[in-house]
Image: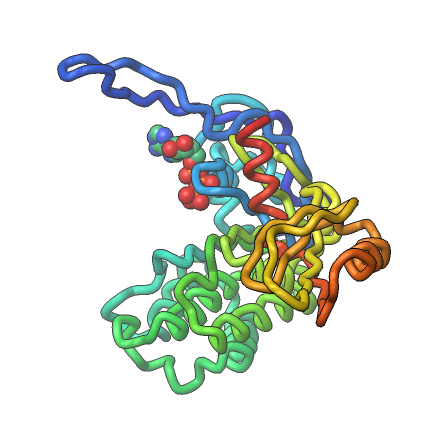
Length: 319
Ligand SMILES: Nc1ncnc2c1ncn2[C@@H]1O[C@H](COP(=O)(O)OP(=O)(O)OP(=O)(O)O)[C@@H](O)[C@H]1O
């Protein structure tokens, strides 16, 4: 069953741009430019793209904060902009850069407020709170005012608050931003458990690709308000025409060497870096280097997912 459905969704903004000292001109920005995709119940989908790609605008439309300029949009069976109250019961939202918790009150009070707003039945509330407290290690923090919590503790509190009413869909916007490695790991582990145990559908926006690698079976890359890639992480390498790197240590320093099937991308003393298509075998390139130049050592490096995506953005920008 599709829980999120977008069909040719558009959102434009009219901005007034300065064209001279006293003149301004109206300009139309297409923040989201014909998005169509569906997310099935239980999926955990990474929603990534460069700054200004249209990610926040999409999330705002999915939460009913912004009305689309065109197209059709459904979340958990409702039209977000028209049925915001019904939608609120079915979704949870966490913004890494903002908190929904009450700053001066103990963490427990924010949870209590969620219980009342969403009219969560007592038993369900207690079960959900207990599970969140256990998984997120919040036990000693419930009576601490939110302003005294560290960023990582606050984020864990925000995650619990977003899930107490059993939402079908969870939107996460940069949930690990600013966290240390241990806190990031804990947040990811929790999200994995929520997705697995409750079947909560997750849409995750992040600039930290480790979040995606560790959590998402599917990733959507958007740029200029359109989907430029939708599929598994493995497929990204092909789509991004990713390259592996052969690092060779020659017996002596020399200018960039010439080897068929590879190109030198960096030279540092006797060490040279040769890039070649990721799907090709390294063997003929190694053989060619060894036949032509005195070789001391070599290693092959796999492409980093960051590089693959960066390349994808650049190609879209140029194309
Ligand atoms: N309220 C607004 N008024 C005018 N233009 C806007 C408004 N909101 C967004 N935009 C423009 O729409 C485009 C998409 O912005 P959006 O915030 O959705 O990008 P994003 O992918 O979330 O970026 P980031 O990673 O920086 O958060 C940008 O060009 C942005 O300047």
